[in-house]
Length: 153
Image (cartoon, rainbow, N blue to C red; front, side, top):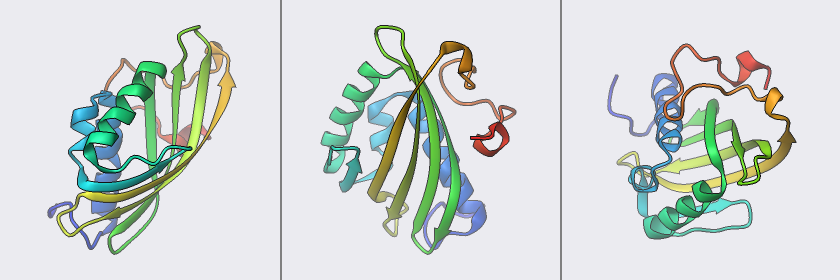
């Protein structure tokens, strides 16, 4: 596979999505922030982080609240230097209440393949622990674990 830079092919877009999923499942804000430009612009719910420093601060707060976080991303569409994904992640709060968060993201990349803009729309659904579908050990989703479409999500 060629470098993961625009213009994107299907193969490159799928690889970018999986790398993003793997990074977020690491729950390591420093690691995740490295794939964004220094001046990256985000919209995530009602927050608008700008640049890597604010992204790291945002992710640190996020994963302090969203415990046992497990995420699946799936390519929705791509073209030139943009990728659209849909995703779902499961997490619990510090009271033991479980949630599945559903969303869509639109990504725009610079010529070096770093994400310069990320717009996320997310909805949270309270679920019972028995209704969870993401049961792999914390960290990277195993290759043989079903994706969103396979799970009917």
